[in-house]
Amino acid sequence: MAVLGVIADDFTGATDIAGMLVKNGMRTIQTIGLPHEKSIPADVDAVVVALKTRSIAAQDAVAQSLSALDALSDAGCIRFFFKYCSTFDSTDQGNIGPVGDALLDALAAKQAIYCPAFPENGRTIFFGHLFVGDLLLSDTHMRHHPLNPMTDASLVRVLARQTPHKVGLVPLKQVQAGSASLRAALDKLLAGDVRHVVVDAVADTDLGIIGVAVGDDPLVTGGSGVALGLPAAYRRRGLLAHKANADTLPKVDGGSAILAGSCSAATLGQIASFDGPQLHLDTDAICRGAPVAAEALAWARDKLGNGPVLLAASDKPDAVKALQAKFGVDKSSRAIEQTMATLAKGLVEAGVGRLVVAGGETSGAVVGALDVSALRIGPEIDPGVPWTASIGGRPLLLALKSGNFGAPDFFTKAFDLL
Image (cartoon, rainbow, N blue to C red):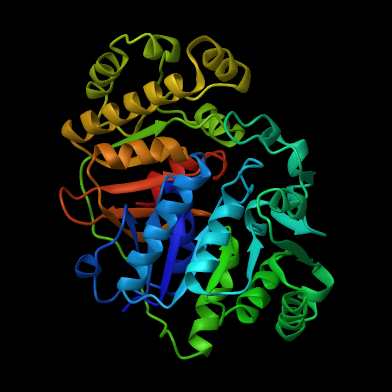
């Protein structure tokens, strides 16, 4: 029976943390929508629910997250994790604080940590400030994010604007003093009615210390990095046995394709580095209702079978802003997502069995179009991005990549791994 239930606020974030758990010996499935107890394989240790709540109204995000919590509880989970992006994407109105408060209330828990650190991918927290590489979050491209612009690197300040409860900090010095020191610091803050605690971390060893310290907590929140220390903590408490080959996936034949919808700098670099056939979609035409998907599928069908093909709606920030100004944020986003969903369905019908998708919103649209209800998590391609296999229906291998993740050669590396 599953021990850990994870509530993720987008699809690629769900895959990210699921891959981290598998890498550390927990057999994991990711469900698209709410899980049903009878559909969870008996060998599964963790169930990750992929929601699409990062950029919706806070009250809707809360409602969906509570429904996920109920479903995971019914499935037997006894520990819970709220997963959000390692860049803490969230406006001043939410959704991280409101969802955190709601989950704590539902679990009758008194405190939760907040730690989006992922040192291997350059996300670190020092004195409560989030860094991406050697830059403060507020000095990176994330300050220009079209939906959740991050202009403040202080996670304590960001979180304090989202909740009526006290927000505190455990600085790096206390974390690196060991798990007992960290636990004592958390308990001291709790005695002062501090409900939400940002925890510093700059290395994987810090994440291991954090995992030991919070292994008994009903709720942990953060990016996928902090999940690195949880499997070992659960084993120490007798809740989990290590399982070999946790990342084994079935072999799936068929063509290979890439769908890129993210406009992040990382994805744009990966597109530029890809040396196979690629087609850049006309997003203006998409928003005008032109038959872009049909034309793109005709182009792709002629090239399938000779290595992966790439179809991209990604563009630079200035071009994205111009498109949104012309057609509106909601209309342009929906039109592009629908086109990518149509492309995914058409590619699979044309014989594609292995598909890489770049971008959280794009990934959500794709799995919805393909009627994928759950994924078994497999081997890691790059930090935070594993291959997955669909459960039920037509067998597919899917790699759902957060726009910000992956090395420049990610697209080529992904298929080489298979």
